[in-house]
Length: 193
Ligand code: AP5
Image 1 (tube, rainbow, N blue to C red):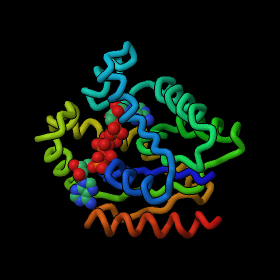
Image 2 (image 1 turned 135 degrees about the vertical axis):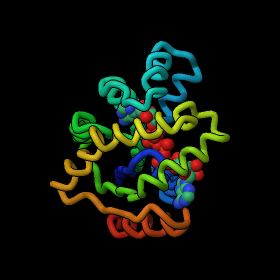
Image 3 (image 1 turned 30 degrees about the vertical axis):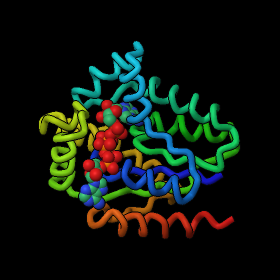
């Protein structure tokens, strides 16, 4: 099993690169943001609760996202590996993920962390907000709140994996194809069967 965390602040290109990486490597894509937006679209109680929090640019509670990831792992017992996008986002989520993978005699192979300046993040997200329909993209105040949550609660997750020597920083500005090539190179070096 090859398990990869694609890490980075809001707007750093995690979703864009995930689509290309899962197509190339046949990994299961687990995006907690996408899972939460599916709950919102289905108007489930969890989705309604999450929407209020997401619209403010804050993180939803750990137990909610950990539960979603646990179910998704159990639902895909024959997966050749997972690409985690937008998860883990807190130290507690990282610890929970390690525990869940250990139960499957697996672990995180590498965290690829996209590095993008705050100015570029805000520019990308405001631009996407013109057409995406994502309510957390339309307002610069909310975009900046998401970035602040990242600095306050999520950036430390990279420190957690750094102690196991699993973090590689990737320049996240430039063409989508160049960034994809840099990510692929790191995966190829570690995913030799
Ligand atoms: P989530 O859905 O995870 O959103 P995010 O982290 O804010 O990330 P985005 O999807 O906005 O950006 P991205 O890095 O995927 O970049 P993308 O490829 O889309 O989370 C949303 C909310 O859900 C959170 O705020 C939180 O409330 C909640 N949540 C989710 N997971 C959670 C968790 N684990 N715990 C607690 N709460 C959680 O690209 C962005 C834009 O840039 C696009 O328009 C794209 O076309 C463009 N772009 C991409 N690459 C490039 C490039 N190289 N050059 C120019 N433009 C580019």
